Amino acid sequence: MDISRRQLAGVILAGTAAAQAPPPPTTEQSGNTELESARSARRTAAQIIARVPLPMTTEPAFQFKA
Image (cartoon, rainbow, N blue to C red; front, side, top):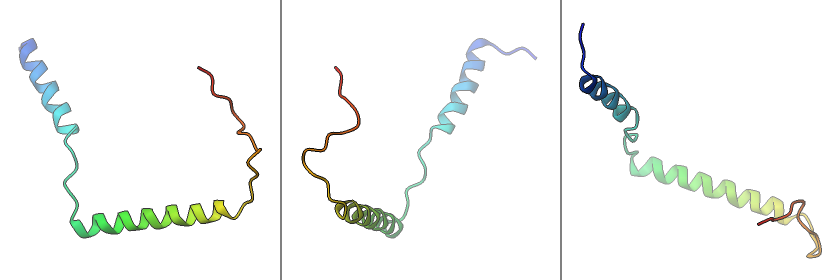
């Protein structure tokens, strides 16, 4: 079977284009549910972190180097 380079490139590009297609849009309701659950998880994490007293003189365990 003879296939030209242009045909081969077209087959490869068609396959990658299909693989990069965005997922179908979710319904508005499920998007809001996911958003609210993520927000509540962040609020809970922030409340847990806020319980720990941390003096302002505490330095981070890493250094910023330019």
